[in-house]
Amino acid sequence: MVDVPPAAGSPGLPFTPDERADYRSIRESQARDYEIQERHMARHRQGTPDLYLRLLAGLATPHLGFPIDRLEHSLQTASRALRDGRDELYVFAALFHDVGDAVAPANHPEAGAAMLRPYVSDDLYWMVRHHGSFQGYYYWHFLGRDRDAREKYRDHRLFGFTAEFCELYDQAAFDRDYRSLSLADFEPLVREVMSRPRNFVPD
Image 1 (cartoon, helix red, strand yellow):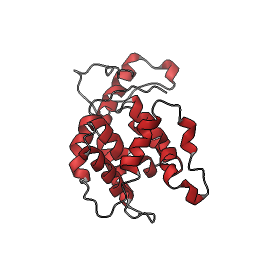
Image 2: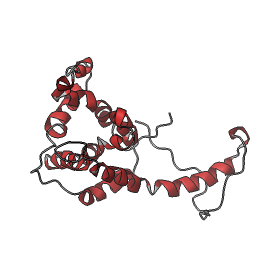
Image 3: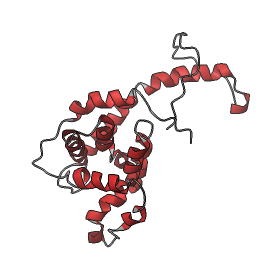
Image 4: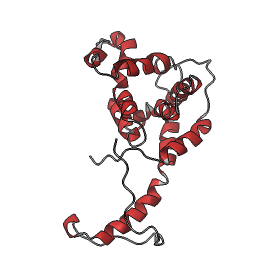
């Protein structure tokens, strides 16, 4: 895990909304340009939790024929994990494990994992990144697909960890009668986790 580098620039300088860098190509840019940009980016990053929460809220429609909508599925997955005593990063990952559906339905595990990577452990990143194949164990055979696709990861140290997530929380979270916590209930946890990124991901 790589620590996030400190923000560049001079934090003591006031933020000026209209201030912009002055270069026509990266090759000719100067240190001052990045001080300006970093002040803007620091402000912009403050709104990231709101963006993530809006994306998650957007999963409420359409329901796509599921017994419950995808927001409720996410809330139920996270509620089950929380009530089972999982730590806050695990609950955060459980809450957002399907957020990739909002922007990239065709590869939602990969997209969602990329969004979570700055905030969760490497193990949780891997779990979310690969949960689609593990979840497929429960239903892919109904669609003519290989339900045992997860077996390609059998020797990976996180196979059991990811299989457990799907068994206990993900595949079980389609119960119309389950009383989930609300998105507002999870908002403080989301803001707390996202206030302290764990990973700097340059590529």
